[in-house]
Image (cartoon, rainbow, N blue to C red):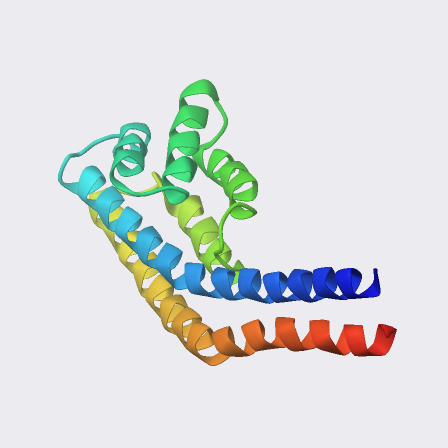
Length: 170
């Protein structure tokens, strides 16, 4: 019975390490998707001259899950609500963020971007999108560095911590 418990403990800690490593791997991918989404949003607003609601609908159609869920929910919430755009944006960020692998840096960038969304003319809006893209590029480099540095270590740490717990408990 002890061995079954030890094996379950080892499997659980190893699985935890692999899940954390998966999150480290997902973060750069989702940042790239976020950058792509902002570029599509820029094209829809500047060249398609679409209102923010329609532009976000188009973004949701063109990018993969889970980020498309955010833009779709944001667009739907804008249609249903009379609240200011930046408040709807922040509310959707709060609801979405726990379902993503994105970090607090990206959240702050998106929060600041949401405060400027729809507040300026086309040229001003383009400048804010470009600013958000440059900040996201910095976060992408940081996320890729973290992934390379910590991914293998986290996997090993999950397994080794399980072994340590087993040795301490036996």
